[in-house]
Image (cartoon, rainbow, N blue to C red; front, side, top):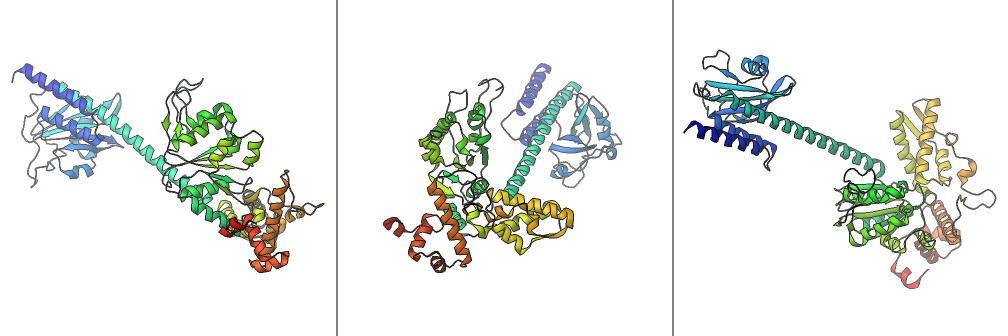
Length: 528
């Protein structure tokens, strides 16, 4: 082979080495391909790429060496040849009779008996400017194998290896970051499920809610969760998602009440670069983030009318379009919406679209207020007490029987959220005065006697802070009275009917209409 053809072959091989690092392969396969070309050009029997990490050389990839090398770590202080390579910015060649032992002696792949010492050795340190990244080494079984190869050939391969090592380090860092974020996300999801993924209580109203959740959860139907502020609508949404077929996919939360009208479309559907002032890059919206999973639209009644029309299209056709883009694409997302507003009344007032209301309320769920399920107050208080004990570092905290009675007689206008805050404040104040082991007394609660009764002093009726329709007020009062009497009657419906002066059959029908019992087919046929 002439010198010219030899040069052309080398140049072709170097070009292949560079291209091998851009191939559609794993990083490991790319570097192994690079070492294959390096061996072909230089005639080495074994070569290795090592990363310099915390003062130690760690193998990244090898060719022609025993697999055990990948599990080894090479301390330059114990390997003089490696130390010499690290100390030079140019290729270091070792004579056949060099007294310094080669780190790969007896580690060549075809060395079954440990009798194949390395005779030719060369190594290049890999620097990115002034940062030492690692070493590229080559070994051969015969002396003088590398004598006819110019240093610039090794330096060229060393430069390519430096790029490969930088790329490998960058990819590894990204993978570590991704794993970290995945773990953080997993922990946050677990924490959220532990904190907000349980529906505590066994009242009749709550049993009916759980039954309906079990019915709808494994479907893909849109769910509208209704209820007063603080009743636990987000908890219901999390439970539905956790019991659905999408449980291993994301649950993305959107607080519609916190979306400014000018940014609402971008937040929900995303935008493309240049769509508006400040849109310097493309950005995915909440629908795209929830792909394959569930999108929870909290306080959906607060959405501006202009956004409601775009949301309706997404629900009708499963299509979303980024702001500023002329392209639409399908979105596989299940919608759960929640509101503390009476959307039917909002529709009549012209503040909510009729068609969107019907799209959202495919399967409506009503979360009963805490005053309608007083039997759930004690277990909820116990749960919040346990949380308070952990958060405040207490040894023991309990409720006195009189305290439970006080909690059960309070109207709870803020519902479960208010109960949580009352318990936490009471535990904090009591622990400041009485130490790490305590029993909460009624006086520790910051609720007034009038508020505890939950009644208006003048009328004797349940106290209301906001006006409501008369029919709803009557239904609420009937619910409370039936539940209170049922609790006093130890869940005996016959005794409850007797105390209320009602026929037992009429009481059952009324309880079903008010959502206190599952509806029966006879109810639909005969009416209440």
